[in-house]
Length: 88
Image (cartoon, rainbow, N blue to C red; front, side):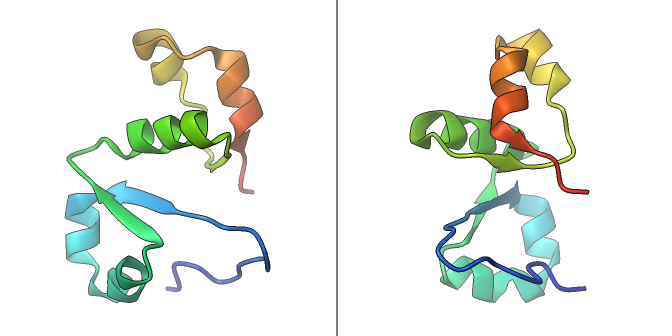
């Protein structure tokens, strides 16, 4: 399975994934060396993605609606909906 099948020219991106998942997938080494994949501690990948989007004005590609982050961590659901690009 390919992790990144297509990247649009001129659109920078970063991938955040839990450290355990990254460690279990040796095929991610090239993405890490290219500084495209960033392992996160525990299950904190959502938090890292959202903080990055907030800090840099970027978007998150995910089917996750992040309802738990709105409910438990104080994120505005409207902000989350605006910054989330749903991958179909």
